[in-house]
Image 1 (cartoon, helix red, strand yellow):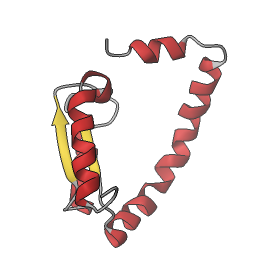
Image 2: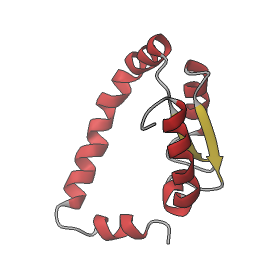
Image 3: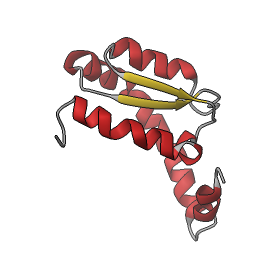
Length: 107
């Protein structure tokens, strides 16, 4: 069932224009990367990272950089592509509550 929801929503009216706008705007995100990385290094927020190990859209090296900037981050790899949450939603959801409890949220 991976991509089922993506396909459904991609066929909605105006989606092509919206996706093109997002893609075009990505260049602005890239300009912010160094600021985001500095924020992470400086503030060390608690972070839970779940990644598809075969994600072609977002290289595995990106997760390694996050882990470098945030040594206490929890990083979990799943045998998946970009949409790991669609295939592994139960496993990933079971990581969230313990993580939030660990950082004293919702206790």
